[in-house]
Amino acid sequence: MKITKLFQRTVFGIIALFGLIGISTSVLSINAVDSHLSKEYESNSEGHARTIADASVDIILNRDLSSLQSLIDQFLKIQGIEYIYITNENGEFLAHTFVPGIPQSILDSDVSNTETVQRTIRGMGDFVEVASPILAGVAGTVHIGMDLKSVSMKIQAAIGAQVYLIAIVFIVGFFSAIWFVSFASKPIVQLQSYAVGLAKSDSNEGSSFAKLLERKDEAGDLARLFQYFSTVADPSKLGEDQNSPESTS
Image (cartoon, rainbow, N blue to C red; front, side, top):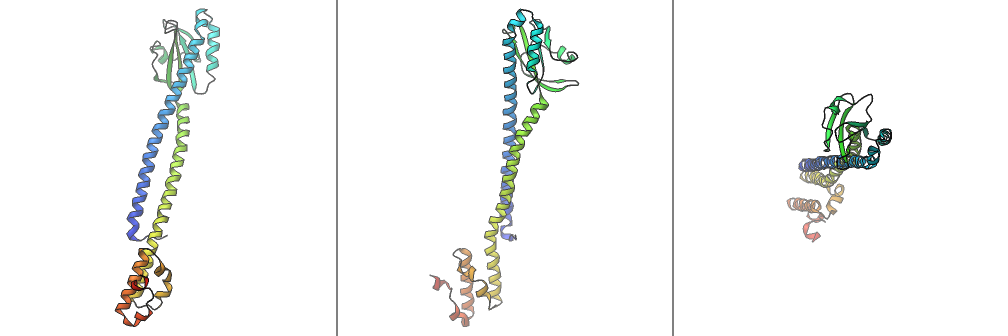
């Protein structure tokens, strides 16, 4: 599909516009999905931590540590949760899911802190750790670690669907822009060929460009105008002119 030089900048402008829209939309969509899903996972983890904190009050007061361990082991089956540990008000570990033992980075941290933190544990990976106090911290604290790798994979899957959609829209828009511009450039090419034929006094220009002369747009008007001027320049064709501006008015 040939595009005239007159419309090449138009095509490049449309492509650039589609590219700008696609890139800006992708960046905005990726940031929105990333932020939304990250907050959602943190919120879900905080909910699980509160559930454990509420369920462990009686267990801690009764000093039934085996039931406490059984409780956190059940929550460990939830996808994304990699570790759970519970400490008392003095920072002593009451139960945990670490095997074979508690990592040194956990032992060196402030276990009374209930703020969400990002933690790197050697040999395990990167995690987002949330916490919930038990009885406002009087009975201890529950800590849950969410695997960032698992969270990132889910975010990438959600973002991937957005990117695929935007890529399809961009590709369809790209070829549609070329196709629509070709509609405008095709009459220009025909008009140019018709003008060259008139300049060469080609006797077949009227029959071969009949559709061009019948057009009701600017290309047809210019073609009829060219034909009119050619007949004025050559009086012998004046009687043959059926599409002069006067005859069409």
